[in-house]
Length: 125
Image (tube, rainbow, N blue to C red; front, side, top):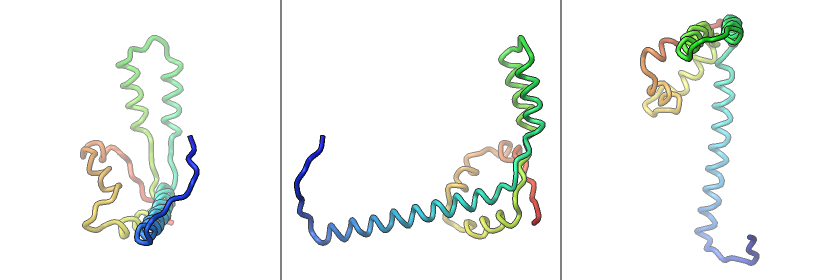
């Protein structure tokens, strides 16, 4: 359904809409910058051993659900994430303040064991 016609708003309301539009544009730019920073953080992902173990799981017959889960967990533990040290330093400098970012919240939601299980390998450039 489409409604046609005109509407009258106050100058104050128009100014508020303009301010909100500018704030939305600013947030979009900041989001894009953050995405670009995070993309630079991961130098590469080594999943060769993981893929090899997944092929073994896929080709093995008559596995119980429990055994499949165990094998998948073992395979996942072989994943290796290589982190760019310069990108990491840049992100730490940008976000290490008293205001929590989304990253702080995500890490904060992880248990110590979960976070420690993620291999972080710094790659000097």
